[in-house]
Length: 422
Image 1 (cartoon, one colour):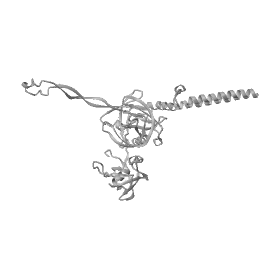
Image 2 (cartoon, helix red, strand yellow):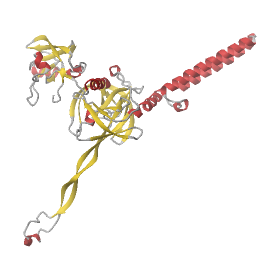
Image 3 (cartoon, one colour):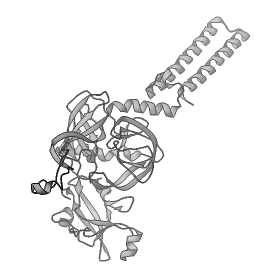
Image 4 (tube, one colour):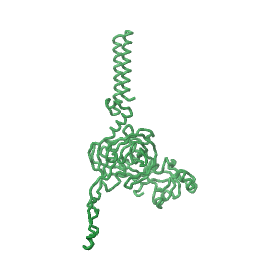
């Protein structure tokens, strides 16, 4: 039952009560002063209920007329979209690309004149004739500060040779500067030179629940700005390997799964709750499925934002180990004694298992070790190593429980800043 129907019900009850009270007053011979007091009581009661109804409508951002005909759920979605849309932006990617022109030439033009009569024909040839600035892609983002700071995906602005233009919801265009790219997550901060902008509130993504309503807003297909889709949170703590046509690829842990439609171009846009607050950033879709999309929990972005404000760049902690996540299958295949944790091993290309001069190397972690826990938190599919490390800051000291040669031991490690090349 929506707010307007509830209001009408209250009014009906009040009217009936007033009529009954008035008739009763006359029947029992109440004095006129008592009747007037009763009338004032019901009038004040009616005004109180009307005030509550008006306040309820205002909470949705809709007037009484605007809310008519919509369920309470629909009113909340409409209000959330109205609240958030001014702070959602489209990002246009442009780059200098070669201009290729076609011309015709005789490939046998160097033959002696006596032979050219037998090979006198033209075939198409191609050559570069300078360059031109051309739109090569697009994405989405959302404003997190009124002076023009915008959060988006790293893969949207990964090309250091490209230019980026931000289109606001009101049609204004601004050139954007890339402030920072997160070395550990698909996150980036960009900036436009303008003030007085609408911003979005960042919610606590640790409180997100499976089944709650999820709203996606973004630049769908790089063409349809502020496209809205609605669904639910379908899963939590998913791990995916995300990539794009440019060759960008990375493994992302602990992402939010949603069935709200995410399309190419939505990357970097917000995943919202019914209050219009950001719970995640739209990041990837499953190409071989329908309505399976993924978003980075917004709490990870909060850490990146705080890092930039303190250090002028986004930094993240690291151990400096390459590893294989252990499960029942890995345990059986390699005759291990545990079915959880991470097995410190060389990379597929022979890269060293423990990076030289890394925090892990300094602490004494060795190739072949199995890291079972971080600060008493078990490492498993639901609590992967990379996600657990994101709970800490550079400089924090953690205790690893390590299995080596059949014996468990504790190793203290002081986390350092992850280098760009690891």
